[in-house]
Image (cartoon, rainbow, N blue to C red; front, side, top):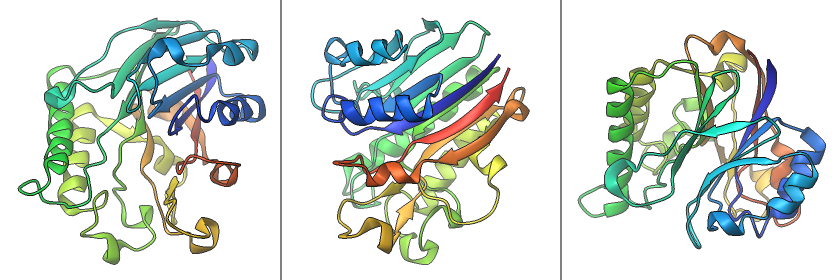
Length: 262
């Protein structure tokens, strides 16, 4: 069963409903995973999504922050969520397609501004969250699964605009990269985006602080599509929809898209 999957930190699904509709209309992914929905589940604007054929949703929500949702044209089975690091946040949800593929949608904590857990509680929470993810994948090795989301880490040197200048900046510090690598290894996950696009600078996030984000191009690849090794070869056609960062009142993230033949 071939299908297209997209992941996007939407930074408020209600505020940017029109952008979600635009993506669904123009790109037509079969499955769209959203992060930072900032909405209770019952207030996610499903009417417009249903009108475009996206009648299935599995989601976890919170008022005003966090929140993850999986929209689909294909039937979905809700297979639960995990509260890593015991934060009580809506940061993970999983759903299973009829072909048996499980999709994990994650929103890993950003980690604050200072990469030192001794003075920044949020950075410690981020590391603990990744550690719990790693331990879960060790204890329950995933199979026939896809993991997507805003993981808030740009792991490779060419996933950021300047490796040297960002080594002490949260999202690219060596300790975060190491934690993410351990999490990836624990689940036998393959980075589908980099499997398809192995070389060159690649970004999915550009700060709102830049006056001209496009010209400055100081981006980071914080959003990821992974698959377990048993199905990774079915993934192809990866792309990042950079143009979406320039849409009216955009999210600071761009959608990441991949095709799967399963």
